[in-house]
Image (spheres, one colour):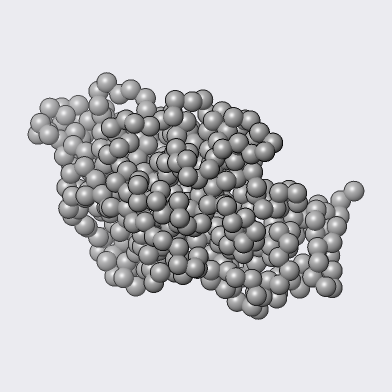
Length: 473
């Protein structure tokens, strides 16, 4: 924990300010970019802080520190990083709990990373621990993403858990652009103090746009990356794509294109200026899961240029955990987002245009180590007209809140129309969800969960399939 690398992270400059705020407040808000180190260091600061009182309970057990993140990938990777920093085995003092995988924790676990949806489900599953008393400190990271699960968790913690557990400490963390806007988070948590982490010093980044929209952005990205590798001086390349299958396809095609070029043009390598890598070999690597992250730590004695193809989420949470020298960024302008799909009749995860804030963050990735370049595969007018300034809360965009209502009912929330969401959804959307659950037999005429509803709430499947499963013998 005392290594110079960790102490160079921005979060260390605010360690004492954060701990002092936590000593005298039940809730503290921390804002900082993804290079600040808050995800890995704040839980360790809390663990060291005696004032937070992580002493033994009467029964001899210790209260854990929970750190939630919106994505499974981020929770697993952060736990692995912290375990390594603390010099312990993953699953012992530091562990994780994520969907569709066995819990990686033990009786020794004091720091537990998990997705926000998993913490919600823990409260749903254990009626005897609805107040999450196994945790002394709950850290909600990635709050700026405003996912449905994050908003449900924050509202539940505020209205139910914090009111009934005055000794519980809550830390809400996220990116500055959203958490600082209009004091929304501070006001929601009744004037909670805000600890602002210093921004990393960045180098200038030269920005380029296309003249027109690309008909096939994936093919355009592949060709653009190959061209960048052939023509740009030394420096790693980071490519933003929306889907994992796109990343795998692009990796294959880029490798093939570069290999074919080099096989046919062996003499070109000697003809390049000394500081130009291309058109030599390149190390083309995907980045979207903990498994793919391992590939980035493999030794490369030739020190070939890295071409990293990543989703936005993976780059946001993993980029600081890999040894990269990113100087060039290629931004396709797309990201995965939960939206209503009229063909399916329910919400789905689709590739949609990213936001201006996300595009600007992608650009800054090129300026971390020296002056860089960012190539945007869309016209400048699209950035200003087609891209929203920030990500809208999912709860305001969703036209199907059936699963959300089912979750809240399972958590014991009776009056949904008066429930204190950070952003209140359309009442008509809530009423439609209540009516549909009543029609499916999940709620009775008084709005209470039935046996069918109890069974349906135990799964995360799409609601119509849930109804069939609940009725199965």
